[in-house]
Length: 84
Image (cartoon, rainbow, N blue to C red; front, side):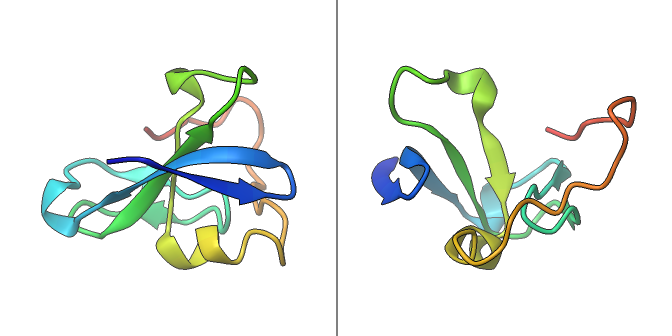
């Protein structure tokens, strides 16, 4: 069940994903590293009208908790493949 979390950049719907429920590889926007299948993590998307479910991003749990202390670490080019 998603919960709403308040951050400096707005309100976010956040849902925890257990390791058993994680079957795909995703790219964490916090550290730009892969989240491999079987790894517990969180999914977050804007809670207000700024976005919809296509704006969901999968984050390592620690990267999500530290997001106020560091910016996105995405260093890939725009043409690079997207995970998720």
